[in-house]
Amino acid sequence: MKYFLECSFISTFESIQKTGTYINGSTQRGLSMYTYGSTLGRTNYPCYYDKDGYHTLVRPYACFKPNSPARKLLDHVWFTNFVEHVEKEVVFFLRTCYPDKKKAKMTLFYMSLAKKVIPSDCRICGSCFNHMTVLGKCEYKEGACIKAHTDELDIITALFHVGKPESGGGTLYYSGSSTKKMGELIHNIAFEHGRLQIGFFDTTLHAAEAWVGIRGGINFNIKKNVLKFFQNKTLKRYYLQYKNAGFPENFVAS
Image (cartoon, rainbow, N blue to C red):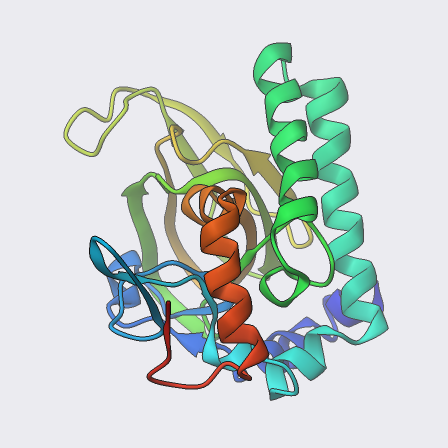
């Protein structure tokens, strides 16, 4: 795809990154993060009210609401085709490569379910992914790294890398289950521009080794809590109230 060629990826990456919602505290991961799609992250509004009180609603990120700059950019045919290709690669990986066939089958079910129950306003380009994160700004860095972590809310993750580091930047995978019990380094996947890594990052401890140069990524995933929310017909009705009102601030559904 010409937009992510080594001669053009920086301008493409910057165009996407500047329209996203910046995540406060994202520098704890070693670089800035910008999000797109939908979230159930804690906030006062929008919310819904029931017999147990007030609760947070799933919502599109501000940058991802209809007619927003990010939405207009990501809805372009070239980006929609890119996301469709990523989704197909995930399906191929699960059907033919992943050794745990039971888990692969269940994940394929969740991917299909996400497209059925999560509204298109909350998914990336009509795909099963409800969440996308742009990692970094494609700036030249010396000694940057991403510390070991898991992404507990992710059902499945597809991570697309762009960049041209002069050294380092590989993805590290550990045998342990937490940062306190990291275990042994079991894989170091060398950085390669255009490489797509697919896996279960909710249980796989991973990191990025220190690098010098330009390194960025685009992460696609399905959030467990968003999928669970929309499986509940009552909660989905609250979301539709919010949508039909035009996604206003300070909204309370009931």
